[in-house]
Length: 333
Image (cartoon, rainbow, N blue to C red; front, side, top):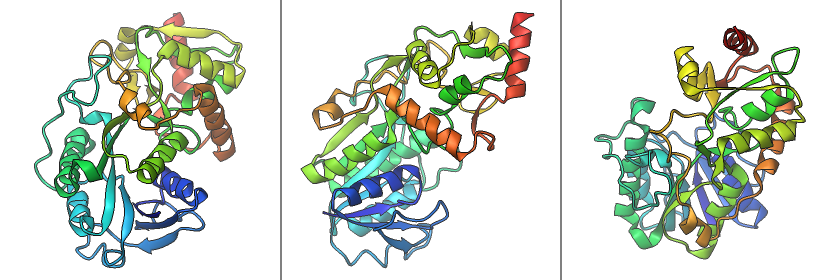
């Protein structure tokens, strides 16, 4: 199989390229190269997708599958126009953020979507979901339902998670901020998590191309209650100190951000408006070959990567040691 990855030098794209190479496929990565190098064995084409001739070096070739992880409708518009007659299929990595409602657990791919972004440029993450909807429409319009794969992914995790949402908890349990080992966690027994290991997602994407899969899929991990997820992270880290569970109203009052960003608690989301965000039906993807490894394996490998890459690096999500100590002190007082 001849695979073209639009990207391929960052986390997911790189994993897709690596997986395809391991399976014996021919891989080309087209990217600016600012996120790193293409995997060894892949051809690399340096290109800026904002330029009108972005695909000039590859558009004359025939491809079995093109994989695109873009969030910019303009990039996707030009890509599908370039490859509609040059590729057997087009796999677009969309997002669960494309859905209009996140409050209903168990929704499948037929749930209502946000309105598509009007325009080719997503100016901020505030319109991320709308931009992904626009991208989906462009892919389906150019390739048709029988030659398209739309993968609406949930939270991606595992080794290499530079966004710090899945590595934060095993690392925090492995390295508590307090002398007695206390760790602050959200008290959210009704909330679900749905992490998919980046390696499992990449394997499914490549496998979809191999098997000629088409359709729209929620590609997520198994649904696991947040307290159970945290307990797995704790076991992986070998933590035996106190666990201090605090309700969401107190956390919000203290200025703690949900999900991601500075001064945040990753994976936590306000309830009930996000009750379905990490509880979507992924049975269609599983019927189409999606397999997922145990959460403990994903978190253990994420922790190993965190420790090897330097726990003191600047982080994109989570509480600093000082913030956590201040919060624990305030809660105890």
